[in-house]
Amino acid sequence: MPIHGNKMKKVFCYSLIFGILQLIPIRALGWGFKAHRQLNYAAVFTLPPELFKFYKPHINYITEKAVNADKRRYAFADEACRHFLDADHYEKKVPIDTIPNAWNNAVLKYSEDTLLAYGIVPWHLQRVQYQLTKAFAEKNLYLILKLSADLGHYAADLHVPLHSTENYNGQLTEQEGIHSLWESRLYELFEPNYDFFTGRASYLPNVSETIWERFAQSFAALDSVLIFEKLAGLKHPNKYSLQSNGRTNVKVYNEAFCIYYNHLLNGMIERRARASINLIGSLWYTAWVDAGQPDLSNLKEEPLKTENNDETLIQTLFQNSRIIGRKED
Ligand SMILES: [Zn+2]
Image (cartoon, rainbow, N blue to C red):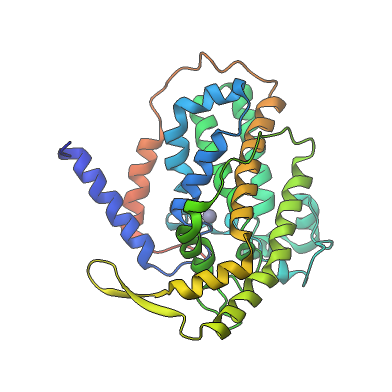
């Protein structure tokens, strides 16, 4: 079907934004856009029937808005730190036993400025979980959908080992580029073989504890992510090749190197993706249960306010066209 008028403009705007997002070197976006969308989408299918029937009609929104949290990093200064926590600023290896799990205790110990400087993803995820629970209790359709999409994003970022370190792009160990290698290049090469059926979401009696366990797993996997990339580089010293993107040739990690690195990682990326999916579904389900399992069958379809927000965001993106806050490289 031909695309006309406003729709065409919108498509053009989004193409421009995605073009910009790909060109700008940025600090740790988390999973690539494709992965974030797929993880939120798959999480809907983990839900028990009583909640699945609410989410299913909104699955396109939940999928598309999975990347909004990353887009906001171009517009708002306080967004960037919500996607990571440089745990190795505080301690060198697991167990994570010096960083307080409770936000107030962490502020007392390190100061809020320090926490914001080195990232807050486990705490922020808990905050969004609280907000989602409240939105369910208030039966606010717009907020339920918006916060569900955001929650999925932060929960997925929590599972990325390179989001737990100051060496987030291998820049301290001569491994620059490892961030997008792990989260985008390998994911996109091997995702067609991933099994996204993770089993049913479950109620989480202690959300904070679960979130910190998942984050600790990411931190524990960091050594392997870095060491195996070095080993793969020894086996395939010529690890790059040129690939055409339609206009010019760009340097990418070649397939032989990626296959060997992925072999050494032994399914890690798929495991972290699957764990993300199940946690996202479980957090949504837990928020709904904690809100008293409200009946969502008659929520009013108000026009989604996000459309206006998106227009503002797009304008800001064009004006700034760079991430505000910490940068990569
Ligand atoms: Zn992110």
